[in-house]
Image 1: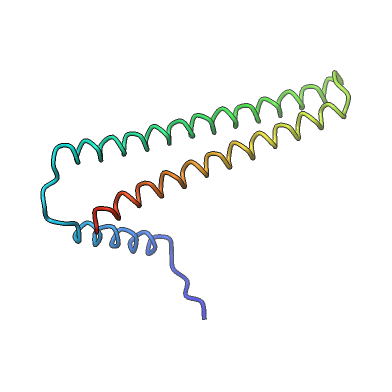
Image 2: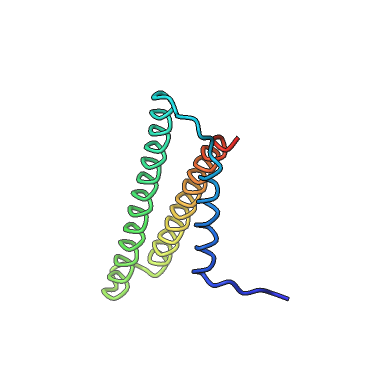
Length: 122
C-alpha cells in the first residue's frame, strides 16, 4: 500500500525535522573563531553555488545560440544538413554536461552543509 504525501506536507515534515535538529544543538556558546569558521564555510558554499549557477547559465545560453544558428542556417540554406545536425548535437551535449556539473556541485554543497550541521549535533 502506497501512501501519497503532498508536497506541502513533505515540506512541513522537513521544516519540523530542521527545527528539531536545532533544538538538540548543544547549549554552549560558540567561540569567535568557531563563528568565523562557520561563516567562512557558508560563504564558500554560496560562492560555489554562484559559480555553478553561472556555468549553467553560460551553458544554457550556448545551447540556445546553437539552436538559433542551426535554425537560421537551415532556413537560409547556408550550411549543409550534416553540419546543422552536428551543431544541434553539440548543443545538446553542452547542455547535458553543464547540467550534470551543476547537479554535482549542488549535491557536494548539500553534503558539506549537512556534515557541518551534523558536527554540531554530536
